[in-house]
Length: 346
Image 1: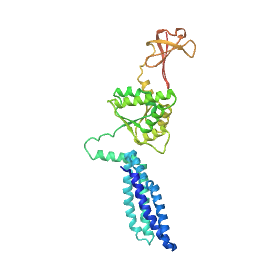
Image 2: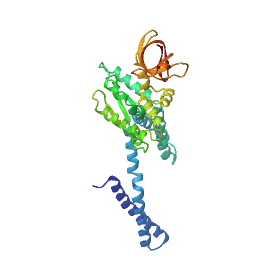
Image 3: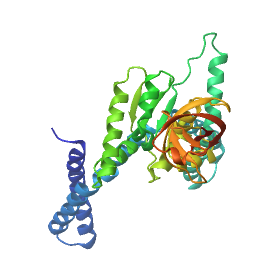
């Protein structure tokens, strides 16, 4: 079975040989020289040129175009098609007076006007593609009495939240109703971490791949791997931010830097750490807890212990009670960016 690229090279070689031979014969007649040498030489050059260049002007551009169309957001594709249509309509109106001009202007200017109008129409509509999408949605809603089905909602997952693993536990609760979307460039980064020579990075990468496999088996939520990419950007976090902007969807992460960058650019961020802090039990001053003191605190005679959910408990006068389990009374609760801290006394 021959590939399309191989067939294009063969067709290009044949066409190059014919074109080269004709050009060699024309050149020989022009120079009044024997045609055999010129015809053979330029035919061979045409064969070589056709074999090398044909895929680069036929198959490869088509393949790149198909790949871009596959990952292009629907609203941008609609904007391009509508832009081409409006540009051709505008060029047709202008071609009537342009055709009255003397040659060669009446042959060149209508084509130039068509190219210019199409370019401007595509540029304007792609810049306002979100407005076009809203207009079409409102037009559809106004034209029917049936409720409009909502578009599919996505949540983009980054590498850190997959490796973290808590996304699997959250998904099993049924709280996530959107489709979890994992771009291929995130999957490649995860595989790169799993193939690392460092044992810690390798174990983290393999854990992420296992979590992803469990997510795909989870019946409560839909998980998809997508080929959508932003080829002009190389950094994974920047790709995620750009893709989230195109899809108008949030990013789920545990990465503090990605969280800040996405929020600055107006993208919704779902941080697992914030969710974990939000669902921790609330403790009020005066309540009693049972905690084991495991280490010294930073100041005075403080001792530090941890509850089952990971909440840090700082116990006054607890340094002498290390490795002991005791009941303490809550005196103050402090919420920090690192989590919730409870201050207590025996």
